[in-house]
Length: 443
Image (tube, rainbow, N blue to C red; front, side, top):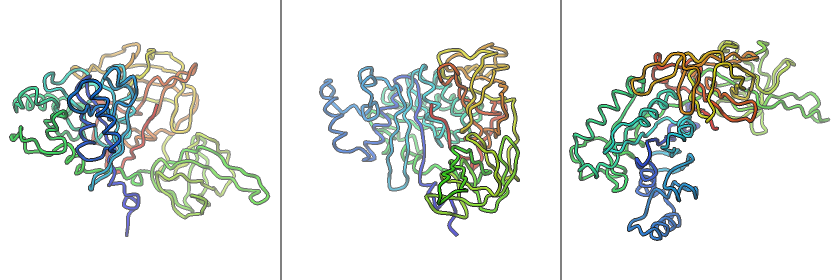
């Protein structure tokens, strides 16, 4: 029998993100990956060659394949997350090339929130720096199950094995303490193409996979159907036409799990129960639906349901709470302070909230917790306690990246202040279970 996962061909797709400090060569690596895997259109390559020649460069600057914004090209830096879609004979890929500047760490949170793998680049000349540690911490918090350490610019250190080994040991020790379940270190030169797509003749001491080979073969397990079913209501449909005078449907995207006609469900936060009477998908009635399908549910009982409510099987319905304890990545320029009044957005529900406590802030150098910092500023990672005006049906982030995540928003102008993970802390980090969903945020 064909499984739901096989039907969706989920295992043929890998979402991954690149991250690293400034000038570590992320965009060059992505460009080399696309170029050497023959995933670049001829006119794109011609445009890059033309711009490179105008700058007086002897060879095409492959970083231009991803640095698409004019400001990025003029300044020679990556500003926004650049998404690229490509495929090889073995797998399809969605790649998020994220910025390296500290001020754009928030973009790394966006790019990695749906990733199954993160490629963290390190300049072989500089080794592990603060931004490297920050990116490792973000990857760990977001429970990215696979991390690749790409030690770049090996050509500039004479392809020395000792340089690579020292950096790999330092990063592996640090990331392991954060709780990253799998770390693979690969020595590369993105500019020369060493160990990106083809094995390097300059590093015969290295016997591991190239970057592309690892991307093609790393196990991917993001079967959304293995998690308890969660259905955030996005829209209530009541056409009230002569043809459908009594139709009442609840539209949205199934965040996780499987829903079936005849199944007993609970509507949260009200706690009222009913039975799924029908499921409409793409204009047809079906008996079963699974994540991430967008469907309309019809219930047997007339219940007061609106946007932001969550429908879940009664047997596995989450508890509701108004006290949210979480770890957050602060992404705004303005500080987050104790007593701040905010909006908390969880799936399709947005409620008023107040920051009751900021118990600690993570110190990246030694992974210690700085107690009672009073506030979090841009790029800080810290623990918060938030009290909401209305109950929320939150899962632990360890169980669901979609229904365990939330945003804190400035009610005055709608600015995203922080990305939160319910229940997360570095003290309790563990590998994300196979089958956990891979939905995330987009700011």
